[in-house]
Amino acid sequence: MPEGDTVWRQARDLHRALAGERLARSDFRVPSLAAVDLAGRVVEGVRAHGKHLLMDVSAGVVIHSHLGMDGIWHIYPTGDPAPRWRRPAHTARAVLRTERAVVVGFSLATLEVVPATRLDDVVGRLGPDLLGPDWYPAEALRRLRQDPARPIGLALLDQRNLAGIGNIYRSELCFLGGVHPATPVGAVPDLVRMVELAKRLLEANKDRAVRSTTGGPSRGDGALWVYRLAGRPCKRCGSIIRHATLGDPAVPARPARDIYYCPRCQPVS
Image (cartoon, rainbow, N blue to C red):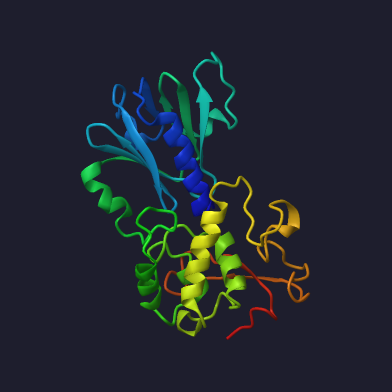
């Protein structure tokens, strides 16, 4: 699933392509939006909140999408009479055409058009956005500390606490914080530093096509500390990195997610 920095880049690129442009055509390929036509309206801007993308359209309308596991927006020039989409056409969920560009949303997990007055129903439950203009670390810490018995690996993924962390950053932050993902929030020795690290890592990577959390090259095994590196030696101590899963007892129907950790650098509490 895309992390907050990926969604931030999508919003930036979409804003550059669409902001101030009038929609010549809108084609929403989901049943609930079959009758929606935004042609003639102006895209006022595109922004992200955590993993959510928000396109502000004139007359008080917002196109809200969430990429989920496989979603992505592509931008194509209108000058090509037969542009070759980089994903199969049957996976397109939205096609927005302006004078300058054709913007296509593929495999979107969520796509809806809502009145701007209802935007709070869409993103109001989310915590502070790590890459947003209203980032408020004290509020993120307050929300995390509300449930001190909850595993830190679950609390970091909960977008109601702070918005923008996915499984990659969850694994890397727990390593950098020296805690096993199953460690209760209340037992994390320096939660303030972990939140600060989250902000720094996403800021450092938001303009990179390939992220790095180690400070090393953003290619190959040198880019990350533990994520998807099970069976390989830890870059700090040489112990073999392990893989496990961590589920949420409060939501048993939700599938457990992968965790990666160093048994020496991140001992189980």
